[in-house]
Each structure stands twice: as structure tokens, then as C-alpha cells.
Length: 287
Image (cartoon, rainbow, N blue to C red; front, side, top):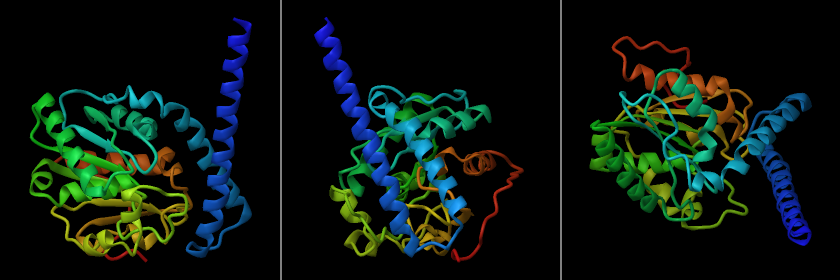
């Protein structure tokens, strides 16, 4: 028993060390690379953003293994329009624990977390999303859903929205930190979907200018450490709305009250005859 406990403790220590090392490398490399495409800011602001990004990692990554098994339902009342959350690259629905909590407290829901193979092609992921949405609509008896996608998840959401089936099912779409015109770097990224995310890929060349069937909202940061420059997230030129937030990191946006409130405001407004929102929208292309 003692030997088994020792081996378990050593294994846990190795996993913790690898996770800590990986997280540190993620922060260091991504914060260095983004400096070429983001406005200069003070060391204090950089350290604060780095701390928030590290905190978001510390909260979500231990939950990722569990959320492959649990978390399809993320709470919320059962009588409203379903909201489907779509995670980004190398992640799963664990990333939405905070946003889902804010949405549930606002009375939105039912809330669902969609998992998919992030290494697959974007059209393949969108096809799986279509199946998931159909199951949710059948389960809830509702004809339409709202979708909220982070990073790659936002690109998958728009791919689904481009189909006749998606255009009929999606009433509201919000993307957060999504590279709608592609990323300028992809170091360490693997899989078909990662190749398609590159700004020069055939997929991005063919999809980045596609008009939107509904007025989707894109929330993005001036200092996203993964998706930059910020113009790559703009949807204004495609018929959508843009909301720019200041200085928040890629994963940290999902733990920002400002971002969560903007998401909830858009979801609630599209279910209300008299929408009210504190989110500032731009009617033209992102600056």
C-alpha cells in the first residue's frame, strides 16, 4: 500500500510539474510573440494580464479531464432558448465554468457545453456541432439556439452558421477571441484544424470574407496573447458587431466580468423586445 501510494504521489508530482512547466512556457512564449502585433503597455499592466491568464489556466486545466465525462449541461433554467458553448483549440467545455455561471444567474438557459475533436478540420467540427444542436433542440423542444464560441470555437460556430441548417437553428451568435481572419503564428499547434486556422490557409482565404446570415457579435482584446492583431477578430465588415476590450489575455477573457456581461447582454437582448446593453459596439471595421 505504501509503495502504491508513493507511486501515485510521484505520478501526481510529475503531472503537476509538466502542467506547471507547460503553463509557464505558454505564458512566456505567447506574451513575447504578441508584442509585435499589440500596443505597447506598461510592465505593471503586462504582469497583471499574465497573472490573470495564469489564474485562468489554474482554474480550467485541472477540470479538463473531468469535463470530457461531465458538463454537457452547464446549468440555467430549462424554459428558455438553449445556449451552446463551444470551446477552443486544445481545450473543452471546462473553459466556460465562469461564463456559464454568470449566464445562469442572469436567468439564461438551459446551458450546454459542446466537446469536439479540436484536431479535426473545421468543417468536420461544424458537422458535429450540427448534430449536437439538433439533439439539444429535440431535447428541449426549442426551434433555435444561441451559440457562444471561444477562439477556434467561434470559427467553428461561423462555419456551422454558414450552412442552411445552421442559419435556421442559430438565433444568436457570440464569439470571444476568435481568429476569423486567421492567426499569424501557429507554433506548437497540430492537427488539420490548426493548419486551417493559419491566416494564409486555403480555408481562411475562402471563409474570412463570407457574409453572416445574422448579426453576430465578436468580442476581442487589444492584447490577446494568442489571437493577434486584433483586426483578425473583426466581424463588422461581414455584417456583424465588434466589441473591443482592453488588455485581457486569451483565456483570461472567459474569466472577465466585462466580457461575461457583454455575452449575457447580447444573449438577453436577442430574447427581449427592448434590449439594453452596456457593451460598446463598433459599426465599422475594427481599428
